[in-house]
Amino acid sequence: DAGITQSPRHKVTETGTPVTLRCHQTENHRYMYWYRQDPGHGLRLIHYSYGVKDTDKGEVSDGYSVSRSKTEDFLLTLESATSSQTSVYFCAIRETANTGELFFGEGSRLTVL
Amino acid sequence: GDSVTQMEGPVTLSEEAFLTINCTYTATGYPSLFWYVQYPGEGLQLLLKATKADDKGSNKGFEATYRKETTSFHLEKGSVQVSDSAVYFCALEGLDDTGRRALTFGSGTRLQVQP
Image (cartoon, rainbow over all chains, first blue to last red; front, side, top):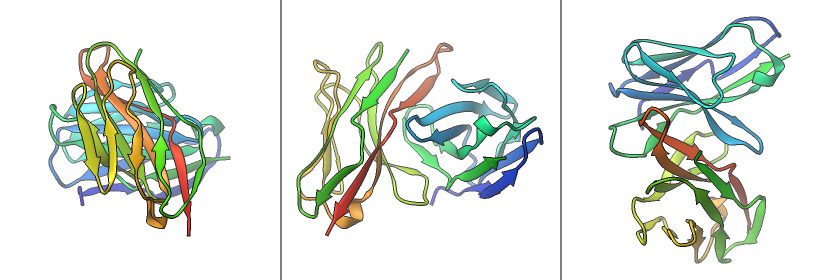
């Protein structure tokens, strides 16, 4: 158990509303990631963080923002949700900079109507 | 940029059959290669990895060999079980534009094993 908790696990919202997904870890690791999973696309990186207030964009960052004010929490925000952001969102952590192994949370399923 | 191509699924096999899931990659330099598995309703978990050419990763009866000459990392298992039914993702770790390590995933291959 890598100590990763995502919330909420399921959410249905309407187009244009703001949504925040939370990733909480108990392992005190520096490196945290947000991915989205869509059929035919596998996992695509949205944003990542290498420490408190150190974040950067991934390949599909448009329409998303993140914040990391504490080591244990990495928040993903959709300022104005669109139907194309309907997806399953996974948070992941990496123990060190020198290994590719990521530990994933159980996912948050978001439906934008 | 880096990319990973996997065979499309679903792959449907009978129990005890031989499994191969093909994976090829495009990358600069010498990436590390991984197979992740996702069981229904769960997040991904690392199945095996190889960090340099000719390395063989293995775990739970699964194997994959890093073939630089063919840029491939095919996943194999000699005798699958119903419990192996899952989605399998091939991934590579290279360096992004900022020089930081980044994982690139394939689109995933669903395996269905029938008793």
